[in-house]
Amino acid sequence: MIDLDTWQEVFATLQKNVARTVMTAWGVFWGTCMLIFMLGIGQGLEGGVTRNMASLSANNVYVWGQRTALPHAGLAPGRQIRLDTDDVEVLRSQVPGVAAVAPNIELGGWRQGNNVSYGDRVSNFGVRGETPQFWEVAVDRPYAGRFINETDMRERRKVTVIGEAVRQMLLHDVDPIGQYVQIRGVHFLVVGVMASIQSGDDAERTNNTVVIPFSTFQTAFNGGNRVGAMGIRARDGVDPLQLETALKQTLAARHRADPDDPQAIGSFNLSKQHQRVENLFRGVRAFVWFVCVATLLAGALGVSNIMLISVKERTREFGIRKALGATPASVVGLVLQEASVLTALAGYLGLVAGVAGLELMSRYATTRDGPLAAPHVDLTAALLAVLVLIVAGLLAGIAPARHAARILPVAALRAE
Picture 1 (cartoon, rainbow, N blue to C red):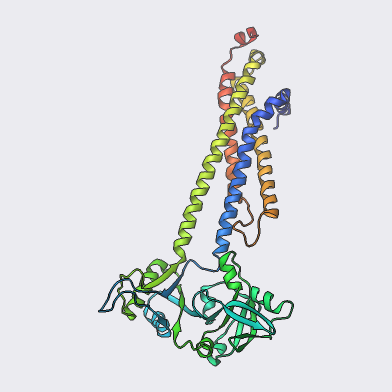
Picture 2: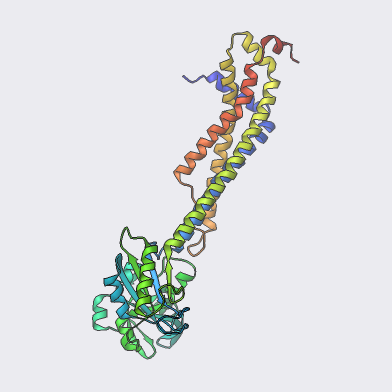
């Protein structure tokens, strides 16, 4: 049963000195608000980083040729390693754990631009030859039309998938599908338009790229059997770090480079970055919880001190209660109830303020291309915050409650 008289007493006591109650509750309010807000910001930053890495899976490895740094088999250092299409077949067939290999090559070299025209409009974009296996190592998809398929590869079709920035700069409001763009005097039929789901430099690169079939690139631009880089997807259960080592050793052996040469074969493994990011945000979350819980406990200490003052002011009241038969447990319960109500009310208001702040930031301070995704707080964090508040309220009331329970009726009635 709910004791309405007790609750009325609790709220009457809190209303007796409004200024003191507000100042007491401020520490708990601010600690809760800061906890929710900082956790939400942390989630937003983590979401932004994850979004920016979205088109690269953690089980993908990327390799390319570089210059050797060590002599090997009578060959001097400084030799350029050039990957070729034979390497693709070797990796597919001889390296365990390889699920897919997607070779590509860029016209003019890495991040080199080329003039691409449509009618009388000309601009500079990257031109890249890709295979249908691109689907296996990336998640960017055309939002209009289609991507390169096996028929395009087999028949060496002059088709292209253009990036969103290419569409905007060259074709404007024209429906791009079925139009022709020109690259170095060769006309290519637009069959798809792709907009990256990433943000930042990676998104800009994808959106400013013209993709053509790898086989067509070899024929139209005298690519021969050269390969610029390869994306390799590991099979489920295969450690990408071990696969990276096996890939580099296999390629080094094929191109007569020292297997221990750190420069001969360049590589990129996103699992390392995923692990670093995960460790970073784990540390950030731990730090946020530490700071905010410490702030909450400091607020609870303030509640405890004010409750002690309140207990001393009510010495005669507690003496009369005990003289009329009130048990120490009932006195302890009353004081704990007052502390818990004050802490819970301040914490709830802080929770509301923190969520409101996150909502405002989500609406006005986040963008698709920015480093911060929409900040939010998950249910687990909210429940933990409530648990911390309950514990803080009980801790705040223990000392005042014990002091009140020890008051002797005779001494209390003599108190001024």
